[in-house]
Image (tube, rainbow, N blue to C red):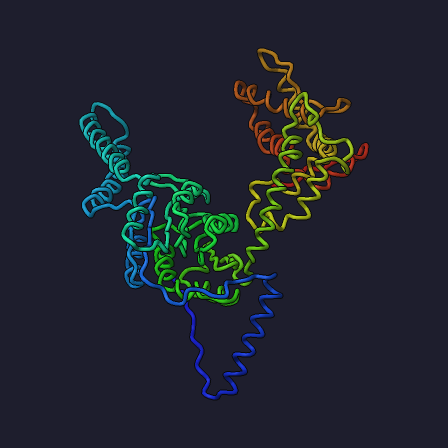
Amino acid sequence: MPQQGHSKRAGFSRIPWQVLAQTLGRVLTVAWILGATGGVSLPVSAQETRGPGVVLFVDFNNAPREVSAAREAAARRGDRLVVLPNLSGEVRGEYDRLLLQIPRLEQQLVALGGRNARTAARFDELSRTLQQAREQRSRLRRQNEITPQAIRTALTAIQQSGDRLETLILSGHSSGRSYFGDFGDLNTDELQTLLAPTSGQPSTLQSLYLWGCYTNTLSETLDWRARFPQLQMILGFDGKAPSSELPASYEMLADAMAKEERIRAARSALEVTRQFRTLRHSLITHSSLTVGSCHVSAENPKDPVSLSQAENCQRTVETLLTLSEASYNRYKAATRGTAFENPPANPGQGILRAFYNELQRHYHCVTLLNREQQLPSREQVLRLIFFENMRQHFNQAYRVELEELNAWLSQLRPPTELRYPGLPPRTASRADVLEFISDLGSVVYDNSPPEALSRFLRNELILSLRALRCMPLTWVEPLRNGEPVPKPRACADL
């Protein structure tokens, strides 16, 4: 993979040019911080010279190349590396052998095509060998599992040695809020509790390397900084992380550890961005770096974010989640016998419209913190507000398919009284529609409909009326009598 590099500027021999360059640099930096970054602030001092410390590498998912890269980088820094689990060379070799052997045995079993008179002896032999290999792998995993007690023991040993834990590397599969893999599963809250000092002394932790998917989103950064305000640097990923077997993973880790002193000493958002861009593979991965109160991401490396701005957005998003639960989620579920069977008759009033207004006003915070999956889209909320208009347009656009559905239902044996509700001249609430879709599921399971009808149920009826997708926003307008409604283009979140 291409290596990301940077060039050093040549020095000036004439003093006036040096003075001019330094002065201009200060002016541009101050102007950029105050204007372009929205008030990004960085610590006025950072540790200029590092002494020996401890790097704790918690390897949840068996990443030997990352461990090797971290060991070499720590040695060059004069630091001591502690690895969990602490596998001996013999155990490591046995585990790696099993990782290769098990899939090979599985493939050989598949190639036999099953157990029969011709293959019985070989099939039974492979099956026994495979079972033994799986059991041995499970034993090794249990014996070396990363548990809270294992981390607690390692931290106690570091403390008793008189050394300082300055760097933590967490490597494994991740949802952002947990780390997991071959050797265990711990969530971020557990890890933070274990790492928090218990003696009343401040934490010595200075840098975090969060080597997993979605580990250094703004939300995760704010959470770590709230628990460990002394942290000077966090490097991780705000999207999918590269495999531990790829150079983009272990080479970036080694490069960042080698440059950590320089990165932590950055005095401005501009300098943080510059340091980030010099890291190997940083711009070809979903990596992100936090130094002081500046957060910069490969997704938009020219536009760093102030953590103070992100903290305000964090509070705003929490409010939006509360409002969504109290309004959108309840009207979307349309529980029978409650006040939420149907959206408010007046689409311009009520708590659902109030939630929509707040979501529009603060959606930049939702995208800033990558919380789109936790909240409905603005289009979904609008469709729910105008659900009655949406339903009428849907009925008109798909009248033929809905009538075919009712005709199919009427022909079933044993007979069923289930029919799609609300075709003119009848009316129906959202609760009626959802109840029909729910009851329809068991009927379809027992009686396979024609393929075209099945596609309609799956791609249009459910995604449109239940999930509030696939309906053009032009349908918010009232349906005029006799006006034809064309079918929308292929189902997507229009």
